[in-house]
Length: 171
Image (cartoon, rainbow, N blue to C red; front, side, top):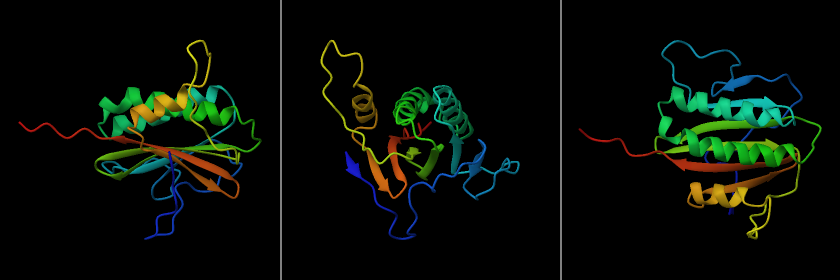
């Protein structure tokens, strides 16, 4: 696991600070409305409450974005990753809202981000064969080939996981 830092070229943090606002989607231009026809957004964020049903909402949100980007091959892995990260956030029992984001930092990477109000850092553990929990981050680690991390922030943290986009098949 590695700890991410803000992008030195822009100084931007991986996710904006959460605010207590109604659930809404914000695209990479900072607009809460739907993108213009033919315009492909390269990032989107949704603000969700800390409730179990938010896990399904996060899955649907990320799946819809991957469908828009025509990256259907990544949907199963992305669904598992965002489910694990949002479940961990829901379990923190924070009183604010969590942010779930999906971005295309490059044509070869899809980044899934989950920000919450807890300063407690995720820890990958070795779950025993009879354990009923503790395998989620190990699955994230395996699916991302170790390309995941956490950014501590004054109000909490952001956990990100990068999926490699398969190379296009040449005719």
